[in-house]
Length: 282
Image (cartoon, rainbow, N blue to C red):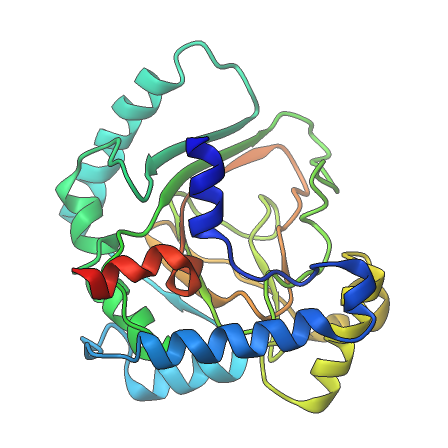
């Protein structure tokens, strides 16, 4: 029961709703009005704390993603890595999986209870204020955080995942944001995140392609878009933060050789969820 209620309050429109109605573009219309309603109700009240300059925000809106190097101070980053190591060992003691996913924080519970995470990812952080600023939606909800580590022991790497996330896809048809914090140097060899530059821009051709995707499913964008030159492998050093617009085309990078990728993942999609009502109730 609790899980059902949680799913209801955290639900947001995806790129596919009801197949029959999607033929008439229902998913696109629902996304447009859903986004509009939340922008009206939760209109931005807080200011950007200059995590990004106005020029950098312009580039983020143009490209759909940006990279912030040295996101944390060196002292905080080293401290967090050490604390994470102990926390992961404790939570993952009997798990020998090559794909480790551990929640650090949910809407209702803070598992790790760490001030560094709160300072950099919490509802009063510069990052949270930036997302409010660029989305024009305010929120008083703590953003869920997930620790993720993928380990590939095959010398030839891996070219696909069981969840098909290595294929180009969009999460939604309106501007909403995710952040990926690299905990180790990440490049093409160990599956750096891939983004199709400019694919989040609002234009008629993109709307038409979104309509086709609603009918055809996740594989459609691989057929609709064939310009590989715009696919950017977002490589960066450890302690780098990737901010991306989830309405743009993206995919999980594959591994070209043996190695691992370690990240902290923050999803701000809840800005458009009923959970966000807590922002105005409080």
